Image (cartoon, rainbow, N blue to C red):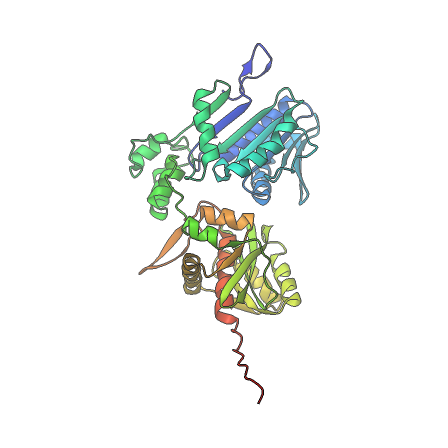
Length: 422
């Protein structure tokens, strides 16, 4: 349907395609197939892929591209994986597939035949406007131009993506592919969820649905697996409180506590720092690196250039290999076990609610908070759930550990008492 040709023009009938499906519906395979279709169909074509951040776009692109090398299509293309030059290139017709960050200047001076936008629900109105401002001029001279937006439905803040779905119902030139439960369906009924999930019986079974339902909140389960938009963002923090804690200021020049965390799928490592100013942790994501290569060396480098109060890391989670490498580099660690990870999450939650923390704006941290969910540890304790969340929370985990480390291990300055000269 999305590749239907208008016989009167010889062009695609739908310049804009909206695909909305539940989680685990094969969206990655569909994205790759669409990109390959365009790359093979049009000589010298330019296909661009983006997601919620530039790093997510590159990681998702490589997640699609690497397995494709093992298919019969593998002999048709070369895969470049350089940090600044990640692309698929079809040598026989000079077509290229590339990732790019979702910023207004990311495609400046480029041309595109197909633009793929993943996780459309994450983009706010302003971010979406900037992204479309980047895409639209690149298609001006390309007769077979098309933009495809793929996403599960979102929350109350996902007004851009939900607006596209509403517009598609009325606009004859927008193709809409939409799977999910109906407004009157019971999202807790797994039989109803299964009937509306396009991958059920293929790559998703009842055990997978039962596991997801047990780990997610009811609203997030309905959104993720029933593709039903939620009435409000079910954030781990109250949205107004989290917004009030944001800052664009750099960290004050004070002794710092570092932390590192690896995402559960090992696609990224977040490194965070925090200082203590008047009893309030100020924290930021220093960087979020693809995979784990070089992460320990980067942390070690940071400790040699800054007065610090240690490095915090959960050795018993996905970050264990980075912790082992830091041991080999003789970097002293504070090992944050399950109890300490839970304490750090609880401390951050309390501080956000009372405005006693400052977090420097960073897109990876924003993305982590938007997908984070709680994981129960029993008897009332809880932590940010790596499996329960619908994306990587490495940045949030690193920031919470750094903030907790700063609050508990950086000593407050002694009070100074001034007296008048005798």
